Amino acid sequence: MRNPLADKVVNIKPSGIRKFFDVVSEMQDAISLGVGEPDFDTPWHIRDEGIYSLEKGRTFYTSNAGLKDLKIEICNYLRRSQGIEYRHNDEVIVTVGGSEAIDIALRAMVNEGDEVLIPQPSYVSYEPCAILANAVPVIIELKAENEFRLTAKELLETVTEKTKVLILPFPNNPTGAIMEREDLEKIAEIVIEKDLFVISDEIYAELTYKEKHVSIASLPGMKERTILINGFSKAYAMTGWRLGYACGPKEIMEQMIKIHQFAIMCAPTTSQYAAIEALKNGDSDVEQMKEAYNQRRRYLLHSFKEMGLECFEPFGAFYVFPCIKEFGMTSEEFANRFLQEEKVAVVPGTAFGDCGEGFVRISYAYSLENLKVAIGRLKDFVEKLRKEQKR
Amino acid sequence: MREKILSIIEKNSRIDVKELAVILGVEEIDVINEMADMEKEGIICGYHTMIDWEKTSIEKVTALIEVRVTPQRGQGFDNIAERIYKYPEVNSVYLISGGFDLLVTLEGKSLKEVSAFVSDKLSTLETVLSTATHFILKKYKDHGTILSKKYEDEREKITP
Image 1 (cartoon, each protein chain N blue to C red):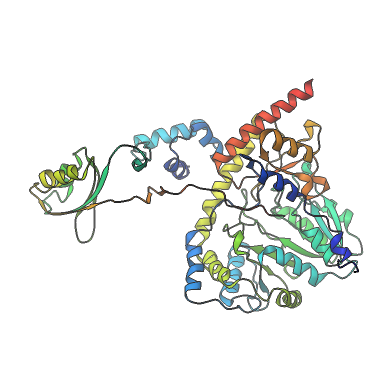
Image 2: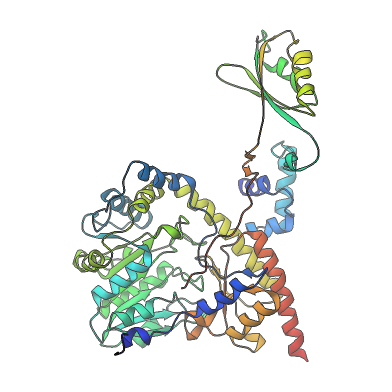
């Protein structure tokens, strides 16, 4: 029999987070700070709307791009939060999570050999998606001294003739970094000058703890060059509903919808009905969850400071990304020992790109009570390591 | 800051001031002052504990009593409400819109004790026209807390 597999897929490395979690799940009383999804249940009124849609027998496909009412609500949301005007009939696609949107946007935009710029540390799926789309991923290594923001200099240094797409993953998983208006303006200038396109993954847009999130698509001249990706998972604690969306220029959307309709048909109908309710009446829920995250964020940063652990202040998502270089071990070694010796799971920074070396990702999608126990153990661990080093 | 302090201590009155200051990103002394002020102003009326008595060996019966009364000239319902809430066994007294006037909640050791209170003390008050007593059989949720269920982290391991 011949080899049934495609080399392109076989050559993709499995995600680094996985083996870690396998160990965690086997271990008794281990606390995980590794999960990347909200600890809240979806607010009841949103769930209720999903249930109601089932009761009413709304169990059919929706149109490929999604329910009209939902697309209208998405446009309303982007108008009130970002001041961007999208047309609901040809500039919005409702997708199965933000993840699908990333995939179909890349597939619709790149030709073989085109370069896709991927700032790292970042979410693990950009690189494989680019490879599967036959593009060449080019990594931009973000730096702690810039608070893991993308700078104009870094972008200029990596752009070549072949560069077509820049992925902009902010607010960022795993670093919690954000890009503010001034940061984005500098990037936009280069994007326009070099005739690039941006896939802006703004899934954590609602979770910022400084100024409100600014989308690069809202800057002059950028709407026509940007695919804005967002979804319901993080803001409304709706991860399991699998619902996201992409907005952008009609010409690109027309091609994205082809891939979407042939591979997926449409996003889950129940989820779409629930999402309408989320956008219409969910603002106060988002506000409440955000306040809870912010309290935990402050608690963690304060605790790091107390134990002298270096960490820049992240203003987005629900992650902190402390530096563990002082202990003279790799982030994987650190994470492994921390798990074995103190039974707390954190994710090594290298799971999000080589430049995550020397950092670990700690998620605060956990209750304060939980975090307190974990931080107590981290303190013990850090002290132990420092004692070892003195010897 | 007040609203934030209140929403936190409403759920967890045992949180220490230092931690409260950290998670709100303010100075400890400001939290202390703000709480002291709110105590003085009667905004914070106490730091009670939520107890599920069902799980203890202590027998308790809770009743909700609808009370219809004749309001008094110049006093409205305040006088009669006061007469009722002064009984230590009375837990709460609310003035209610709708089919009756006062909603009284009451805790007693037994059904008998509660009935005795209603028939001997409450119904005999001059202005009380009628009462209807409802005994609570099971508390599912109280003060925003679900009593029967324990939170479990059901998030599955997922990559990425």
